Length: 268
Ligand code: MLT
Image (cartoon, rainbow, N blue to C red):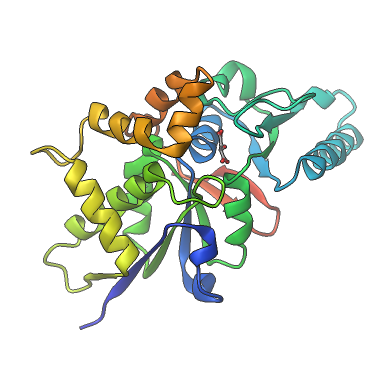
């Protein structure tokens, strides 16, 4: 019998060389990069350009603003914004931090956002060469699962926090794995999963109540215990945990195109 594969990696450093080549990679940074990017794209950002470094982000903004001005005289340079964080805090000279609710339609619609974050944009960089790169979060869980259900090989890439495994990313990987396996039940194309996917799935199921999904409270309890979550609470950003714990806020599939290195919404 033929099978399909789900690989989970608790950290980008755990991905074996070459494994992503024929995989759809889902980058996961629940607190907060991929939640915030999903929100920005759902709220109408024209594109998000992920950068690893702060200097690279400034240079990219400058290049894109100049290109805009050359193309259309009346395009304001402010149509390109800088967003992101270091140590969880907004960066000097940046227009936006990394709090998902600040990526509102009023701030992002029609704009290009050049983003750099501590772990999330680095994990995206590690996924170069994958068959496709998808941005995943609880905010678009069902849309991501629906898309992956058509795939042969899936790699769920947890960004972690400062090179440490982090519970909220593993929880999401478990949710995706569980949903894919459930929806393939009885099919002649079952999913094979690696040990990290097995662990993530058990973690998700252990957090679940009698229903299919854990409650928002049980997801929040996981976030509050995690390294990334407790860092954000210490900075007065508990509200971001609540935002990130809500499942299926948006029906949007952000895809990172590897040639342009831009995240845009896949046509639905
Ligand atoms: C990350 O990329 O690690 C996150 O954006 C961190 C954060 O939001 O504080």
